[in-house]
Image 1: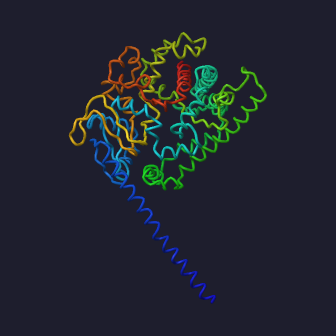
Image 2: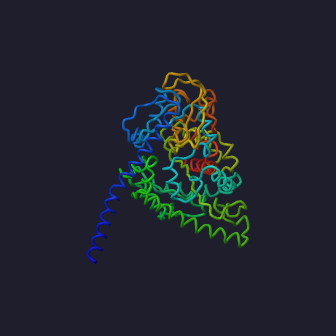
Image 3: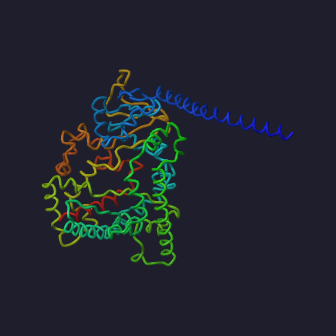
Length: 479
């Protein structure tokens, strides 16, 4: 009897193993087939557009675009060849609609976070930092943005301006000292103080030569190129969601960054709450963004901030490349050689500095494109009629639910078709002589007709913080 029982158990184990071996490939096959059916159905309903051919059914053009150092140039070539609206092959036979038409771009951003939401792979990356503003969509995003808006108001940023100046002066002193003592022509200075003190009321100590856990995690992330596994998982995950679960080295690094930020935020929340309970006076209270949020009646007790800091490096590089522009800026800044300009003067009283900042943001956007997925069917209007892939003249395009849609920010910011023949040149003067209003770029409805901070409901909430910090750093970096 015992022998029979063992035989039955071993036979059941064999069946179980055999079934698993069969079920796994069958499950993958079922996922792929269902994906193919969905893609085919969606492609048939969305307006057929001209565009480049796909070099690979599995990757489309995604792998090539993912590896390009300047995706804007490629999109601009596509725009010239295929028109202001075109299709780009994606993974597993899918196709993304790329919008370069100003009217279509304005329509897209007006419906951002509701009709158009971030792709699953982008949201998965943001989800590693908790349910934050970058991850949120729809009503959740609207609610979080409303809760945060008080901390990014002009009055809040005005209170932070002394922090920006303190960090800028410290940075300048370190640069001057480093250049005097350096044995070569280059130095590296790590700067996190403005975002640390201004955003979180936390001194990372980078200007004092200290290393923090978060800077170590960011250094490791930046020094590690994405491997094949990470790249394949990121590109193919929207088609095969199981890949989100795949452990990769970069995913572990994201988690390390998230853990470091979480430790800092928890400490700051406790400190800010203690200030509030102790009734610390307004003049002595923490004026950082997170401190302001805790004191705000509308603040949520579990808000996690994720800020994109716009640094001044690109502006300084462009000023070094263009000595006359640097001299023009220096001439304007002479009036503040003995004192710091006020917040109001920074915003409205330095037109050439403002022009330099705008031109830097136009020429060097932090994010090259906005990727979204249509959550419902939509009809997108066009500025002028185009010819679709079937040879028909159309003045709008139909986008089916589930269709990926892209706004090529880097391309639109520097396109010759929008900004003229000198679009690639760094020319702050274009903002002073009314040249922009004469260009087709004036049809873009975003602020100053550039899309670096996006537009619509997802316009960068920290824009004012970033611009003020940006101007202060340039102001005090020019000798």
